[in-house]
Amino acid sequence: MNNVVNERTPQVIAAEINMIKHHTQKTVLTNAVEIGQRLTEAKALLKHGEWGQWLKESVSYSHSTATRLMQIYKEYGPKLLGLSEGDDSSNYATLHNLTYSQALILLGVPEEEREELVKDNDIENMSSRELQQTVNEKNQAIEDRDKAQVEKTQVIEEKEVLKKELDGKDREIASLTEQARDLEKQVEDFKLKYQQELDKVTEKQPELKEVAEAAPSAEKISELEEKLKTVQAKTSSISSDAQFSIHRENIRKAFDELLRTLTALAKTDPVQKEINRAAAQEMLQNMANMVKEWPPAIKTNLRINTSN
Image 1 (cartoon, rainbow, N blue to C red):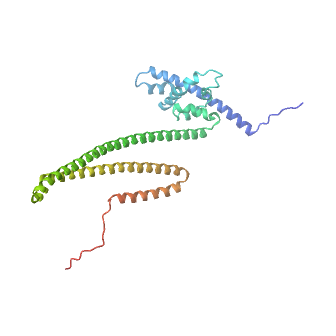
Image 2: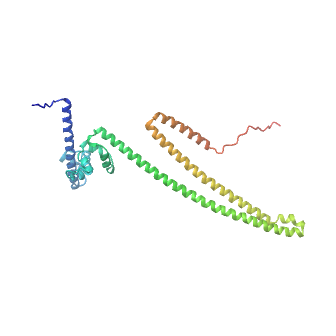
Image 3: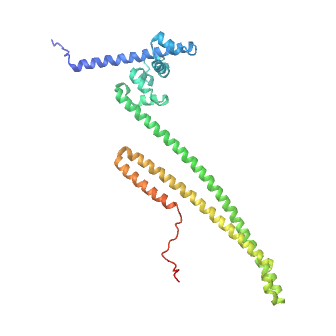
């Protein structure tokens, strides 16, 4: 007959203690939910200004402790108190097995993200430190996601603004181009008509040619040509301004990408990040200095000799 002897070792005792601690903490969570429910009920019955005094005299709780317990009830109560046995398919079953410490740490995650975190991780077997690290990583991921969404929205809005700006310039250019074509036609028609009239006059009286060329008709042609030059110059200016808007947007996008690259590098290689940041700063400073005066003033080595 074999006698089974359970050897009592420090490891066995530690395992038993940890198991008792775990069960105790789960009981603490359930009790905390029950207390939080009753605190919530009591607060609703008390008059304004009586809450703090009631906590102190009736249950010896600080305001912060009561608030934490009511938050525990608000966040977990409906799920834990309403959970039926055997509902292992639900995330609620995992929530039911949380310890009080784990439940408090999970309050640091938005409610809509909490169940996903519980579903994707073995929360029950995590230490408080491991869970806190997981929560921190989750919150960082949420922050990065929200930031990316904000940046995406900003990019879309900026693209829309730029599109409207360029569309407006395109319409203005089209209108000016039409004006230029009309003026060109007016100039050509007027020149043709004027030349025909001039030929008729000078054919009969050649001595009137100089007088005819200096007549108001010649001034009209000159006026139309000046208008045409003005319209063409304005068209060219608007076109260049549209190109400027496009290049400005491309520079802004490239700068945003540069910042994102530095942010990513800061997490993997802070030393190289700082080298690249300094190089980017120097480049941008040089560019800023260049654009202070552009085009640059023309310099010459010629000297005027005023001695004579």
